[in-house]
Amino acid sequence: MKKKEPKSRDKSGLQKPTKKGTNNGRRHNGEKSKSMELPRHVTIGHSVIENIGEICRSLQLKGSAVLVVDKTTKRIAGDRVEKVLVSEKYDAWQAVITEADLDNLTQVKSVISEVKARFVLGVGGGRPIDIAKLASYEAKKPFLSVPTAASHDGIVSSQASILDNNNRKSFNTHSPFAVVADTKIISESPYRLLAAGCGDIISNITAVKDWVLAKKLRNEYFSSSAAMLSELTAKMLLENAEMIKPRLEESAWLVAKALVSSGVAMSIAGSSRSASGSEHMFSHALDRLAPKPALHGEQCAVGTIMVMYLHGGNWKEIRNALTKLKVPVTAKDLKIEDELIIEALTIAHTIRPDRYTILSGGLT
Image (cartoon, rainbow, N blue to C red):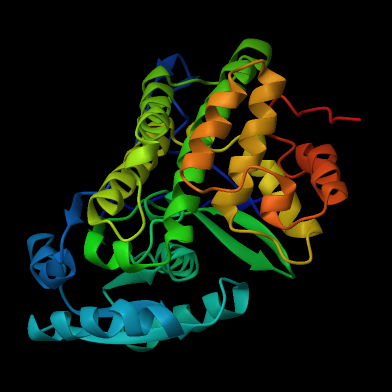
């Protein structure tokens, strides 16, 4: 596995790339270079979790493995993954977390060190996968993503969202070495999670518009291939919204495939730019303000409608598709007060001041 250069963190918790390594395609000393990190293996399908041992063998992974789970995902898939790995002669250990925060991160890193793990699996939704992703990155171990729900594109991206003193911060990590998405398990998860994943994917549309704006006004690096893949993925869900149904494995397959495509677009871009713009900043602002925030993808969906309006785009098309998907489209749907929605919009630009969007400079 290719080692990455260490990265420094700024005050917001975001990591800054060092001078060495990828420069997102910009010229340096007269030469242009670009590197990207993509999953080596992606498997999506019915009961593919039963093949996880064979997949690890095909990737030439050896030694002990640590499975990061929470109480729920341990029951849904963690115990089964452990059994399959043991049957393939792996030593498997489970680290059960309660939250995606720095304390649980430290706990998992200790387990990785104690058992001398050679690779790490994140089995679950956002919390286990984010912790597994960052812990494996800091321990310099390969990471495998085994989602039990398709609620957001974090199952494939190189970004980890971690709580630090009740503030959610984003960390640059590494892309999964492999993704094993069992559509039987995903289809049996609450439909709200699948719908939230659709909201997260559809938000790519405004993220790309913000990126184009930054290119025009700030001469920011822009990858047309990453932007195109990200937009196509979002439009695929817009056009097929009526096909996404509860407890339908075909729906789980379609959304999981879209999440993987979105993750690949971010890998090509070298950042989360193709899938995270002002609508994501709005969501993170709500996380700070709301006593009980909604799901990330739900908040991004509402943010996308408003941001699309600001861009002068077809926000009604997005709202209508989200309504078909049963994704929240209003403050009332989110069960968050109107005043907090407005406040989140006015402070969203402070969440990532380094990232230029249509909200940069702030709204009155």
